[in-house]
Structure formats: C-alpha cells, structure tokens
Length: 137
Length: 137
DNA sequence: ATGCCTGCAAAGCTTTTGCAGATGC
DNA sequence: GCATCTGCAAAAGCTTTGCAGGCAT
Image (cartoon, rainbow over all chains, first blue to last red; front, side):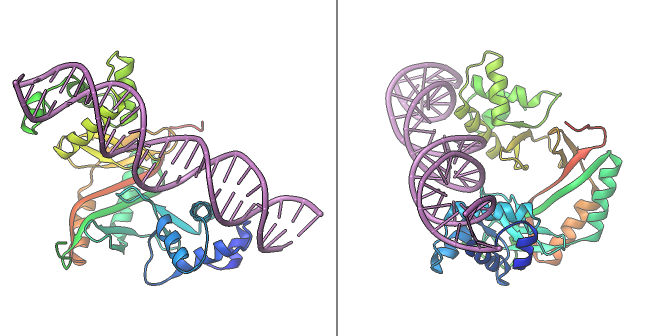
C-alpha cells in the first residue's frame, strides 16, 4: 500500500492518511479498531482526530485497501487488504486473532450458495474461543 | 419454548416475556432485531418499552433460549434457539435470511481449530450477497 | 409482603456528520 | 486558487442503566 494507491483512489496524500497507512502495515499487529489507531497516533504525537480516523478508514475500505470486520464486542476492526482471503479465529480471552484459509471450506461455501441460488459477494467466518496456551485471567 | 423454560431460567412469567416469546416462535420469520420486536408489539397493542425488549432478549440469550447474531448493518438480530446449529446466507438487497447447515464445513472447522491449538466455543459464518431471484431495487 | 419487573428517561458507546479553517496539488 | 481535507463538537443510532412504581408468587 503506497501513496500511489491513495492517488488512484482519488484521495490526496495527506499526513493522516499516510500515518494510518503505516500503522496498518506494521507487521506486529494486523487488526485495529478505529480507537486503537487513534490512540497509537496520539501516543506518537500525531494529533489526528478520531473522526478523521473513521473517515480515512471508511475511505480505505471503499477503495478496497482495507477490510472491515465486525467481530463480537462492539467495535469494528480493520485490516489491510493483502489480496489473500482468509478467515479468523478470535480468542475471547485475549483478543488474539489468528488468520487461516481452507480450500475445502471455501469450495463448500460456493457449492452451498449455488444450491440455494445465492450469489456470494462477501462472507465472514469467525471462530470464537480460546487458544490452548492461554491461561485463565 | 414455554413458561417452564422461563421458570427454570429463574425468570418470572410476565406479559412482556411471554409476548416476546410468542413473536420469536412465529413460523413466518425467524430473525428479529429488538426494534422489529418492539414495533410488532406496539402494532399489536402491547405497550411494552424498547428497554424491556432489550432486557428480555438479553435474559433469553443468557438462558440459552435465543441466539444473538451480529450481521452487517448495525442492529443485532435474535433467533430462537432450536438446538440445531446452522449458519446463514443474508441478502444485502432485501435482508432475507436463509439458514443452512453443512457437515463438511463443520468438520473442517474443528480440524482447523485443533491444528492451531484452538478451542471453539462459538462460531459465526455468514455469507453475504443476494438471491438470484431478487431484482434490483 | 417482598423481591423481581417494567416503563420512562437519561446515559453510554461507537460511529457519522456539519462546519470553518487548513492543506495538498 | 480551489477543491479537498481535517479537527472539533455536535448528532445519530443502537443498546444499557438508574430509578420509582407495578406485578408475580
């Protein structure tokens, strides 16, 4: 994701947009709520408004640069679109997110949709639970 | 779902609870938002507050009598727990919901979770799109 | 009788929007 | 220079909560 992506989406290259882009590209964490990003920006001395964070994320989503996930728990989380579809396992204990992809499931989804005359434009599959190595709070 | 279910959940048998129970049991529609239920009650001359609807639904959920789904679009929807797990196809055009169940997918989910040391307590799988016989607005 | 319930209104949270000034191109 | 963008504050939408009176048992 580069400034060129912004331009081709008709978006001007501004500080808030590039900063948010950088955060989403960080390799340590991949799923951020708008609030997460806002706090990250503030703690790094980038005085960017929360409203701007929401606006930028919505624009990025519209441009296909990020994906929005509505996991349980109220806040939506955003993730960089890397072109590789995947689903999620979300720990309800720690919030940890693991991505996975399974050919068998993807294929069955298409088959089942076809059987019911349904055209899939999008899908979400999220497993909630916890990892075996996570201990009780 | 009967008044006995309410009692064993430690809930008193009251008018709001039985009315909401009846609505959820209606065979024509299975997925209701709190607002849907509220409007239904009002239009049938049951002056029950929206807050009560939310409270009752939360209690039913806690008692395992209903399931809450967070589909796209802000509002949560509630569905009677009939003991048969299933997933959903949701039309983004009409809001129509189709339930389905697939053994292959369920099995793969368990296998994948096991591979990653993950214990599933719950999962949601929702396909978004539209049905072939639905026409453009 | 008493403890659980309900309605109303108010508050809480996340997200969106209006507006005036600031900034990218 | 001009359109787009941003920050702030206000508003909006969904859901929860406090409280005083009402109801089930």
